[in-house]
Amino acid sequence: MIVGDGERVIDDCGIVVRGGLIEVIGPRDALGAGPARQTVCLAGKTVIPALVNPHGHIGYWKGAGADAANFSTDNVLDHLRRLAYYGVGVFQSLGTDRDDTEVRIRDRQRKGDLEEGLAVLFTAGAGIVAPTPGSGNGGPFFAADAVHEATSAEDARRHVRALAAKNVDAVKFWLDDRHGAKARLQPDVYQAIIDEAHTHGLKAAAHIYTVDDAKAAIHAGADILAHLPRTPAPDRELLDLVTTRDVAVFTSMSIQRPDGDGWLDDPALADLMPAEAIADLRTRIKSNAPQPLFDTTEAYQRMESTLRTFVDAGVRVVFSADTGLLTQIPGFAEHRELEALVAAGLPPLVALRCATRESAALLGIADRGTLEVGKRADFVVLSADPLQDITNTRRIESVYFQGRPVDRLGIRDRVRGATE
Image (cartoon, rainbow, N blue to C red):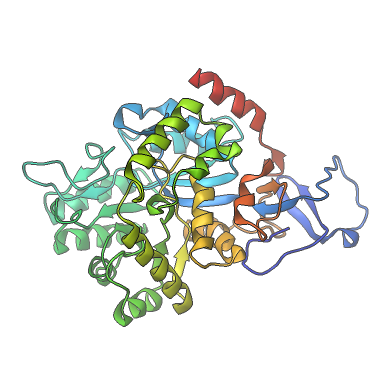
């Protein structure tokens, strides 16, 4: 049992679950012989907490890529099933909601009106970006028409107030200029976004690219950097800012990782992804090799170095797979992110902590993230030990939410049936 706190591993562990919560946990011989309605033997398995991803984009991926035409209620629900299948218990869609579809689904889920066995959805609604005169804005390519183009500080405040009225879970804005190709949000506008978000008790997440962007966002009061700064290396000023202000920095690495196409051969991916879609993605990856589909190998090397620097400096580094575009297949991307973190130098226990305890804490979910007494029994049963090889998080035997098994076979049949 890997607890999720980055330290504790309990060998020959036992868990007692009652009412969806962990009642007792510890060495099996010390649990005692209390009454049990059902006993499940997981001998020889490894158990980890369900993963929590606070940064992705839901509803756009279909087949081998993301597109605005794919977005729908049905596709959002399909992604929540896929996420659950791969052991992701909570997923936050960060700024690409369309026509409040995510908000409505989230509200239905919290009322108990959706099927069980889905990942829990959080949403930041529609994020905010600067308009670029004569061109599309600098928002995500698949949702540029869905994000809000702020024309002034007051316009930005009005949009944040509208988001708050819908009880969104965070506010997202794109600060950078996409390598000079798009207009930047001006300081008075992103300052207004952050101030208004804080007025309503919401965290503000900034999409940034450079160290200067990161500093500007933090000086304005941003709570989250949605990406590691890629250029140049972080200096002492940035390290002091992120640590003294307890700013969370999302990892968002695997989307830029130049790791080739070998991972497409993983049998776990083929569970839910059709062969023709895998072949399509493989062709695109190979056509761009040795560069990744996004950015460059040089930028990725800087990100790996920055990650190590941040961790060594005590920065609040939080797991983020930036799921739902390019190579980031819903549910599987989260496992690729874990692999990227370990390849960059994080011990597996620390990478898992980033993806469980730290991400749950950022979302304010006190009852998830670690496997401890009083918390939800949301866990993933693995057939192999991820401390020996982090890619073993993909060797999933079963997934439990609130102590009940997720119907993975039913999800697989449903997803495969929809793609045939």
